[in-house]
Image 1 (cartoon, rainbow, N blue to C red):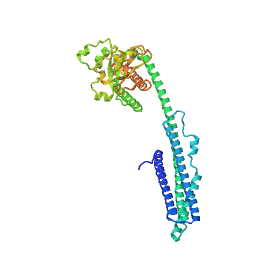
Image 2 (tube, rainbow, N blue to C red; image 1 turned 90 degrees about the vertical axis):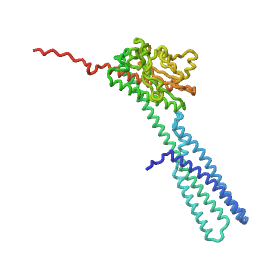
Image 3 (cartoon, helix red, strand yellow; image 1 turned 135 degrees about the horizontal axis):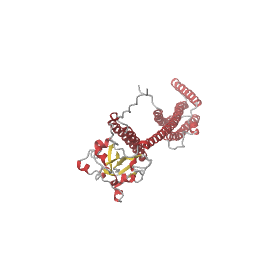
Image 4 (cartoon, one colour; image 1 turned 180 degrees about the vertical axis):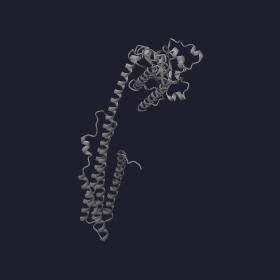
Length: 447
């Protein structure tokens, strides 16, 4: 069984029917006036007295038609205004814009009294028209004005039914505006609750992370990202994969809202020592021999699924880059909160950008890098787990990465990764089952 139509669908159906009936009645009006002129003033020869009566009825018919047309035009103007107000309310065009005003509500309220009046008039006029039609069929000769009066009654019934339909349509429009207002109020409440809950969760997460880091997280943990406990390695890989997928979806949705048609790539870069590089990376012997165990390097820990699958040239855990040879990372290590540029080629020509990956121009021209870190001591590079990066070729040459947009999304992801990495290190520092230290035997009780 199909679901019932929504109010929006009902409103659209009313709008279509309204226009159809409007033009049908205009056409009928023109036909009736033309038929009246042709039947009474051209084909028949009424007496001067009948001509005077016919002229009065004809003027009345013309006046009623003009009044109906003006009413239609006035109704169209009001209905368009109310519909625009309703749609603007639904879209949240202004924070101070509520719903339809009281004047609009009053103008579009449906009173039962006009319905009863119009219904009775339609029934009376229809009965009179039927009586005249019956008399014309039974009586051989009827006065000429009976034909005009019959046309007038039929046309009046059509006009009355049109007015009745317009009132119904206006009530539907009022319901539509009210529903949009209620939905907007509910959406605003829901957004506020979600925002408050998210803010509370973020504060708790940040405070908890800082407390744990202060107690357990100083220095670079030698088993970071490799972990002695194999179960923690799987947890890290799945957690990083989920965070990257969520961030990709959020940034893609952000681009869609701004009508930005650019492909992006997201990666998690981590800071490790030279000794850790040999454990984490699958490198060739020549490259591994150049690694200084005491120096610090950047390696790619993970990439988004599409990049890792379709662009295998963009390595994961196969290369190690010195921190000082990349402007992206060295800029943050000197105290900046992020590195953002939407035209790296221009920045390189100006002498302000270096990248020790010789193929970087093939993959991106815009990038945004945020640190995965704890902010207790920003100047301490030991405090930084790594970097969360997003890049794009930016063929449109637009400002696709902004501090108010993508950076907020990336900062959220970086904080989440910092909490994940910290928790994994704390758990990994717990002695394994085969390393558990047995408690010393208690001395025998005294006699």
